[in-house]
Image 1 (cartoon, helix red, strand yellow):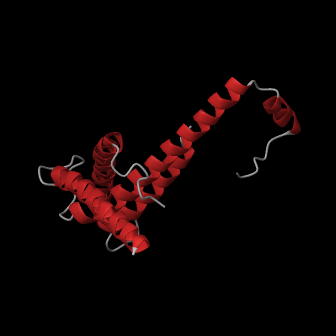
Image 2 (cartoon, chains in turn cyan, brown; image 1 turned 45 degrees about the vertical axis):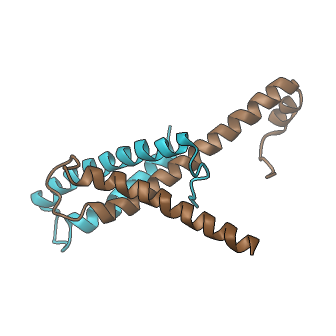
Length: 70
Length: 95
């Protein structure tokens, strides 16, 4: 179920959170980095939900129904 | 239209669908495509807006008081900008 969505989410989460939480990779993931990762993932998903709500509002109003994705 | 890769059995039973069922199936496929398109846009917008709005140190899993409105504004302004691009392209086509 929702494999494509999960795959993209996984990729994006890692992309953003690795960049933000592991600026200088050490010999292992420190506890600080792990904590940051957890917060970062939650934040990113919260951001996804906010964007989804906001964008759907536009789509429902009929503005830019094509979305301009691609 | 793209050629669907389905088994001969599936192809045969598709042929046997009533006109009404065919229409319903078509509608379903169109809706799913639109959902996929919307989801793709949400993914790309989240990516872009996260970069712009979440700039301070990440210490909490929630969006803070400035991040939430920033994400919302980011989506709204993206839509404005998108509209500007569409208008501009239309103008170019007509001149």
